Length: 162
Image (tube, rainbow, N blue to C red; front, side, top):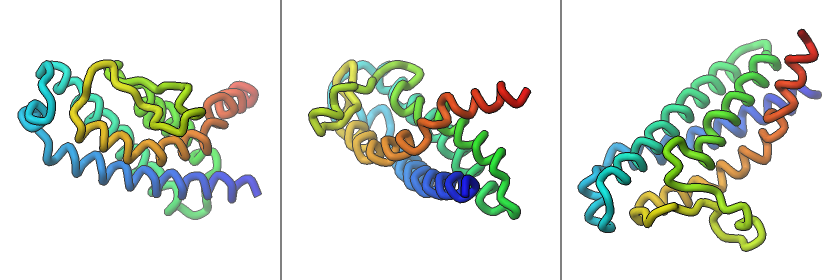
């Protein structure tokens, strides 16, 4: 029974990461700092950092997606490897989405009560970036809700087994 829960989580995360990777790469393959400057006047260094955050997120999501594909395609299903992967995805992909390295956006915790998007920008961001992040937010929220368990439980299990 527990194997089925973990397997379904791997499959869900694989689907959501595939969608996010596609969106991120499509955006990153077509955007430049100059095109962002045309959208809204701002500092070039801020645009470079925004793109850096997105590239970092894309890499983490691609790595997570690859790991999910390997695990879901392996027979017999390896629950321990799947749990380790889900833990890593939670801490790399989901945490990076809500708390990016360069701290150019953040999660407004009150957004759950207002029904609005949770991501707020510290400085005005180009509309295309806001649209991209907004379009991925529901997938990341769903993954976070499914994987929040791994934030503490996986570590607890590992320390108890040692």
